[in-house]
Length: 174
Image (cartoon, rainbow, N blue to C red; front, side):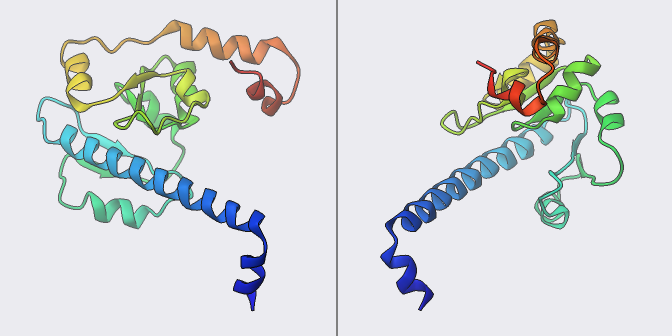
């Protein structure tokens, strides 16, 4: 009965198609990130990798994925800010934690192994794009990970321009 109702509504079909497309892109992005992190952890010259899943993601799945990777630890307890302050660099895939890193003076890199799946959100705008493990390793090993002051200036500019709610400020980001 419900399927007949959905079949009769083309607008619902397009929503379903859009959701499927978004889910497929998210999965492709996630797989690329997992491969990136596994490759990165195999380099003994790199520091330990701490993964802090998004609160909506399953901590058990992340632990299962990286169970055999001794240089990767998955955490979900406590506030993330002390972890950011204790890190040499924050790697993310479009997280608002990138803003915390910028405001704390911690370098941050937006991991995008697949350029067709880049979220052009605030996390992207205040981060340095990194597309593959080799380029990140090279930057890290050559000590070319620097805090980018222009990222902090961008956040401060956004926050100081108006007294609008933050959602209104975000809409105006170029």
